[in-house]
Length: 368
Image 1 (cartoon, rainbow, N blue to C red):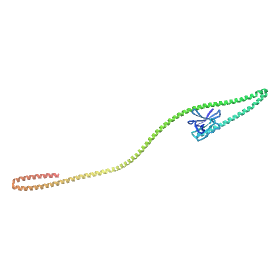
Image 2 (image 1 turned 30 degrees about the vertical axis):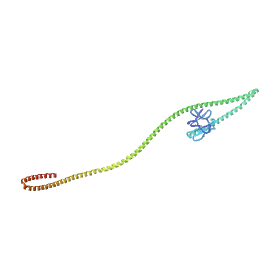
Image 3 (image 1 turned 30 degrees about the horizontal axis):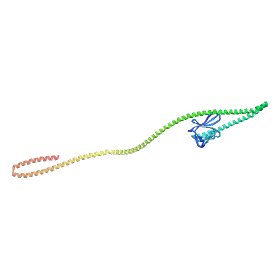
Image 4 (image 1 turned 60 degrees about the vertical axis):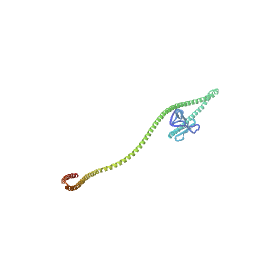
């Protein structure tokens, strides 16, 4: 009965049968590669299945060698399959573990072959000894029997014995074939189970792949959203930079305004003094204007008084002149008419009286 003793995952390749140089991939992706041990046949095999296809079924013999061709690739030749298998691993550690297991299985196969050879040698020795013992028995029987029996039964017994040996060997061979057939059936059953498991694993892997694709699409959408957000953040940063520059300018303007305000406050402290001085000056100006107005009125009044006096003098002179003229006329008229002279004196007196009243009124008006 075969049982897995070591399992790993690798990409499987086979040598190109035409060129014997190029590698042909036997699997599209990394598959399971396992060592199986058959306890009935005492043999070791490397088996790998990709889906429903068996891509490796190699029985390990002591003559095989596993060669590391690179850090992650190894190969071995199988003369029975007439091909060379290659395995590509994901890491160097997996390759080294597989190579170590190959060497262990090779040594175990070598020991198993040596044990089988020893058993065959012991069995052949036993058969030879039994063949030597049978003629002596025949001789004894021939001695005890008659001469006719010797002649008739001696060669037939030898033929029967040879046939019996052949039948025994055939029976033994058939038993071996039966065991091998049973082992093959069991291995086929295991392979079918492995195929079913691989199919289920493939289905689960497909579902996982779809989930991963969905997650990938979601992540891409998130990445695009984040890129848009990053663009918006960059725009906000630029706006913030512009705002910081504007704030600095406003702060500088504010400092200037504060300086001006401080200067105005200092000037405002002087304003009450200036207002007091202005009030004093206005008061002084008002007093000066009142004084000038009074002085001007006084001067005007004096001017009016001088003009009145001058007019009065002029009027008196004119009146004196008129009186002189009238006296001359009166003197000439006295000679002509005395009564007419009296009337004229009266009219002159009335005129003088009227002139005196007018002069008084004129003087009072100028004084006012």
